[in-house]
Length: 210
Image 1: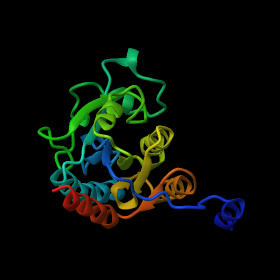
Image 2: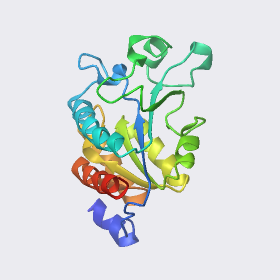
Image 3: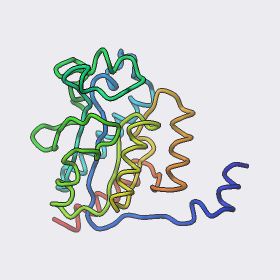
């Protein structure tokens, strides 16, 4: 019934579609979230890591710019007012949880940097990278769907990018906020697709630009 109400109002009225120059934004695939034994890990996050690695293999072979971020802080003095306890305990520079997930990061290719707010775009150099490469289509992957992914999607939308979220390349602690937030982002800001759809687009992009 809720979906029908939004549809009647006019939400989800159109698809955004892909543009001509893609970019990849990988949000917080760091060991605090991706370590299978960690407290933030979940089946959804592990699935997202596996599918993101598939997308990245094609993206890198096509020369697509990849911004890959993690969250960390120097001390309690520079941590925002997070209400998440482990952030105040385990997210300091050098802590194991701040290390990049090896399945989704490539130091020889990706632009890897630290962020200190939910969005990969907030007060970071991400837009500089994407502007340099003329990106018009932002593919957002990572975790958590209901937090840093949603914030990054809103900022990508606000910056004027065609924003694409492959559902099986983002994860959360629980399926319900994962689905609820994807549904709502899909009503307003982004196209919600599957990883195979993104891979097909990137493969076509690679062939056109060989």
